[in-house]
Image (cartoon, rainbow, N blue to C red; front, side, top):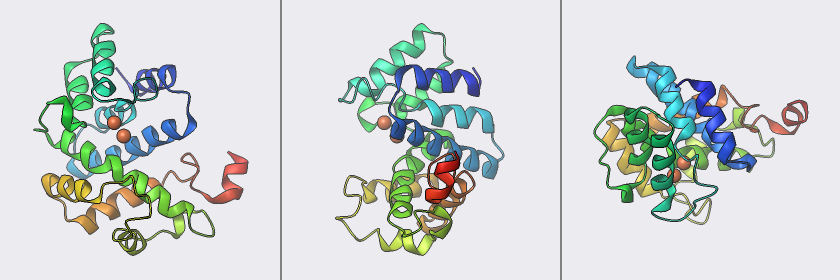
Amino acid sequence: MNRDDAWNLLCEFTQTESLRKHALAVEFAMRAYARRYGEDEELWGVVGLVHDFDYEQNPTIPEHTAVGAKIMHERGWPEEIVTAMLSHADYSGVPRTTTMQKALAAVDELTGLISAVALVRPSKNIADVTVKSVKNKWKDKAFAAGVNRKEIEQCAADLGVPLEEHIGVVLAALQAHAVELGLGGPLASQQS
Ligand SMILES: [Fe+2]
Ligand SMILES: [Fe+2]
């Protein structure tokens, strides 16, 4: 299973643009961490891309991830990828034992918070976002209220990366793909 297979699986089950962008953001963050740890970048990217592929059709607990795992099993996806996908949801009961699984959990919600910070910049450009500006929104509970800061902190600690460093890794990964993520400002998105 390669990146094309992952993208096709995602798009077959996900029409919503924002959900596809979320999958891409998590893919880019996972690739950054794979490079950092000298791991298999393609594998980690695939896991990021597919981790929420069943969410649009199954947004409820525990269907989200359980239905996805069933579909992946039927289609012969490798167990390593299915297990990693399952592990991002605490309620799936699959413990996070590998660095890949821990990285997935740590980047998942953080990509959403960083994107939200970019979109409230006057430029709507992620190039103008800094680690400090993300940290400033950390305490602002009303901002991107759906993002569980405590969970990100816990997952970063579980991964063994200090929070500010973690934000820096994910921010740089998203900045490198600003236009694809719709975070390159209004001019960039007109061109894409
Ligand atoms: Fe999810
Ligand atoms: Fe997600």
